[in-house]
Amino acid sequence: MNGTQRFNGLSFDIDLGEFSVHVKKFTLDITDNSTAAKRNGRPDGWLKGDVEGSGKITIDRSGLKAFTNAAKTAKSFQDLDTFDIQSYAKLGDDEFKVNVYGCKIKLASLLNIDKGSTDETEFELDYVVTSPKFVEIDGTPYVNQESETSSS
Image 1 (cartoon, rainbow, N blue to C red):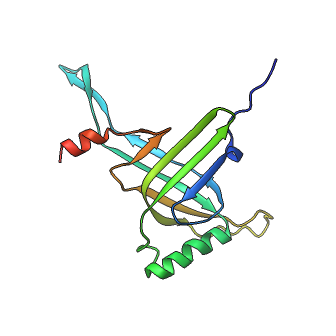
Image 2: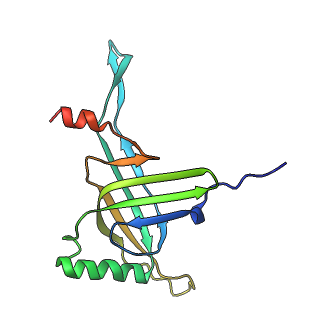
């Protein structure tokens, strides 16, 4: 029986806007507050809810230096501009692409020193998604962009 190679962390390239950094770990969590509508205490249809996205970027010391240099130019970490994140993997004919728009970073885990460890020091940056464009999965938007513009 022939096994098929599957996607894993080594399959992905990740681009953090203008930041040229090696990402050790990258997560994206989406919260979609759509819910069932109820009438007389029973489900009766559904209601579109608000969405939010957030995640973590784990980087090494050279990655932190890239963000520190950008923060210096911006005058502080809080003043860093938002950026888009693109993650991409390809195995043969199969491609998997996720774009995350308007990411605003916050330092999360700056120091976690373990004198007994020989592991490389890592730094965690939390981010929140701030753009109405939100997230695209394989080129398909998570939220309907047309309904966003028609309700304004």
